[in-house]
Image: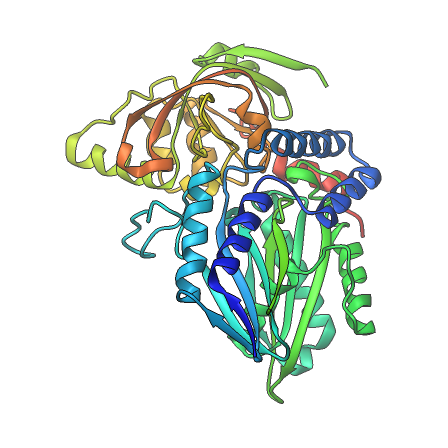
Length: 283
Length: 184
């Protein structure tokens, strides 16, 4: 049995949160630069250049790329041959969030109750999904998800007869509806299959995969490219002021589903797609 | 495109000249306000008959900034989605609010109230909070301090870059520009 102490988990998450809020990962930067290269509108190119300038300022001054420093979402896959020692893992994750948001001078954007709406003052709690996997390490994927784009996300229980055309139509409707509200150009995470809750989770997980990567299954990597091309015909463009760069990347994740269903979830993310994957090895 | 520099507060003469699509650099005072502050302002109007700050002729910036690092006046401060304030905006426009800065669509009631009251809606670049912060020269909390990032703050801005999205005639860039690049 390999051992991982929770101090190590806490430190890794603390460092990652401080990093992703100020420095975009290279896959996301690559997508923005590519957007600038192909954008046909002068206003659109001007906005993309300002976005790149913004990201450079954030990186050099170590200040947040966007004032909405998000709600932390964590997918933790724990190897079944690992023994976790130290404190409660959920507690240390939230401790890491609290300390990183304090030390990074990040905005605290979480309210304790959806109706009562009192700010918790420390950006906790995080949304945490635990999973058990083979192996003797812990894989943590995390994001600090902004809500301008989260609010434009949607889920629909399609019929099996709606097929791939139905999926395309729903993704298109969701992105068109998001329009200027979601801070385009945007990233699109699509979850297909599973149950209602599972496909929502997959759509979030899709945004945490490298945005310049492709689904391993051919029909889905082709669908990713097809959707990218289709969505960029919308004309919405950077900030909704017209252009050919509405979407910077589309990632799809899937899961087996029931004979009666075809659940689809579309998780929209603005151009500030903050994500990181960490692997902590057992010792 | 040329950027015009204008001094705040806005007045009807300035507003008359502002057309959807104009790039503008704002100079002067803007007040921050987002979801929680708007909700409380409308409650205050009902219960106390007044707002904590006179918004007549003023401009609201829909923003909840990050805390300032030591030595800075404010943290990153880009626009939030304006549509969430649509429920409250017509009341404030009727009270004389002249400018709103945010991002994203407005509903027809807000646009109607803008046309009736001669007001303008500016868009700033969403997700560019680090860049926009550079145009903010001072920041002072003036009401609802308990709301933290959602408190009402008085900001002094210099050459704060925005685009006129919806002008006082109701011309709306979000309705016109995407059509130019939409492909079949």
